[in-house]
Image (cartoon, rainbow, N blue to C red):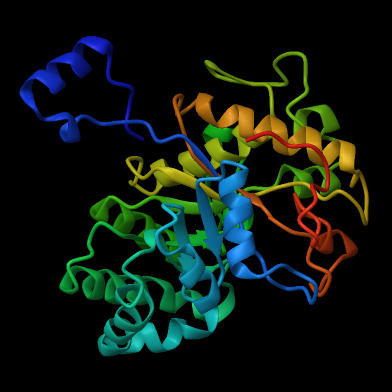
Length: 334
């Protein structure tokens, strides 16, 4: 991750007119915009809700034309997923990637595309398609003069293993594809997108994990890992990813937390109070980075709305910061 430049360095850069060459730390909070509900506001209303709350970045999980039209001219940065169902075509046919870029990016010149996500938590045999699809997508963007848009993939915590964080590696089931992906990201300067959920780690390991460690409310160090002290589980999970990248020879690759959140209802420790505590603390924390990578970081809260048609456990329908009528599910300050 890029490091802070000191004030002297910044002044010199301004004098020399080379400010763009100075490494900067990105720190920002976005919110994932899920649409698996039958009672959600229009895309134009959603974009206005982002703007009125000072939310400067969004993630969408497929090519949502309504959202793209509403985002045009908004200056909201966007992560857009290609959809897992498209990986095979994008991996096998470079022209498919070129057509995708033409239809879904070039057709929306007023949208501030930041990252294209080639697969979200891909599993099974489809993992072999991630890297070739990323390569074809990168080539298509370059050919279109859009190499400023970075291409990555979004992975779950399940691709890593090891404790403490310094012992992190890519898990045995994931190392065969994650190693080459990590090396490729290092070559392109793109981040790895990671979905990081202390909530699920806590629920699955309540005997070992104190809820305060998961909620950013521990009063002091919980895990001492060499010279790094961990007061919250979020940092430990992110730094496990960093150690895994280092072990794969790709320590220069930054992490962007592409999802993180806490449910307000529907299961163990799922309450509005806990959700508010976690998400507000996450928003307040991103400027600090982690013990391994201090400084700013990018993170995306999941999700903007409670999605009443989402499958899975009941908690899956209660991750929203807002209700479908646009009222806050609980107080939050961006």
